[in-house]
Amino acid sequence: MSDHVQDENIRVQSASAALPQPHQHSLVARCFSHDPSFSGNLAPEYLPPPVTSFSQSAISSQSAMSSHDTAASRAIDVPSHNFPRYDYSPDLLDDPELRAGKHRKLLRFPSYLTSLIDYAKPDELKREVNDKFRTKFPHVRITLTKLRSLKREMVHICQQSFSSSTASEGWALLTVAHAHSYFDSLCLNGSVYKATRKPLAGACLLISAKINDVKGDTLVTLIEKIENQLRLERSELLSSELNALLALQFSIHAPTVHVNTRYQRLLFEH
View 1 (cartoon, rainbow, N blue to C red):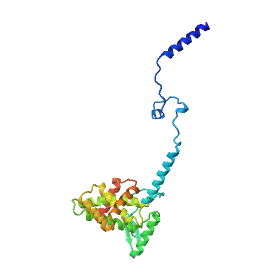
View 2: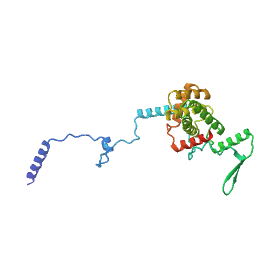
View 3: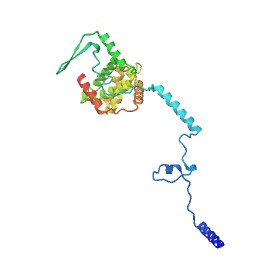
View 4: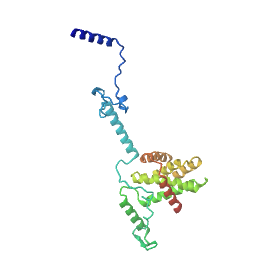
């Protein structure tokens, strides 16, 4: 009986060996790692390698790229340190209320408010306003009076550049509103200081003009006005444009509500 069973097993094995076997493919990790429907058990030798296992050449290549990026960051002076975060608003830096300092007295009545502003010497008022600004933003490397002076100069440049175009007033102020938004962001991240304030102010105007589809003779006039009034070379202006974009991390689409708030303020002040 046992001999008969053994003979049957031999015949079954021979028959199965004679059948054509399907082509065997080796498992590839990337095929099943991206297939959510795959739920089979994997042998250890087919598991994908850990992400921390780099070859020596990859490590050296990565370190070379890192050192290159660090050198590039130093070359364009992009701040690498962390600054405090604020709930951003268009009037965060250039607060319209910060003008009179301690010489302003607010009177509160049941139905209205009024202010009394005592006379103060311009130098004393300037020093007091800048001290308050420095206390509020200790990491910003430009004074409030210089920030406001540059912003006024940016308005004058745009108004002169758009004077010959149709709808010049609204177009100029819209361009300035975007430029002020960029410039405030650069001040908050520490990119603006004495050596870079004018090149970056001109770069913000140029970026804003391109965002608002300013072209042709108007764009040429704007570039010439920036060069003349801010005393910049063409090469310095164009290189500062790239530096500004990098410092802004190419986030140049300002929220509409921020631009509109700045635009309304510019209409009121100019």
